[in-house]
Image 1 (cartoon, helix red, strand yellow):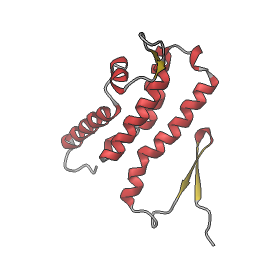
Image 2 (tube, rainbow, N blue to C red):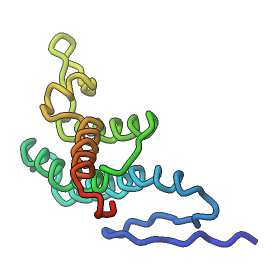
Image 3 (tube, rainbow, N blue to C red):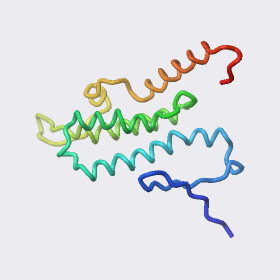
Length: 155
């Protein structure tokens, strides 16, 4: 008979099943860290949106919420991640999902129809570097700190 997996409770009542390290390799477990963080932050984001409907918050306030709350939680410890193309793509998709939610849709001038924003339009509207570039710059900054540490210090 199969037993139910252990459950780890995060704040905001997020529930994420946990399997033992014996079942998964350590590397697979480390690869899931960004994905788990994105799942938790997505729930937080939608709870914030439910408390304050999007039309009541200005775009500037939504961007501040994204930069201060969402990015800080998702990028916590990103200096030690080794991302593959799959994880980078998931992070970009997550970022574009949140930015589309912030900036909304656009109305075509010619046809008058509403459409979703394309990735290039999102990049133009959101002037900050994308999430993958932020991770890479933080990793380089952390590597610089490690190089400057003395030999007697343990990383």
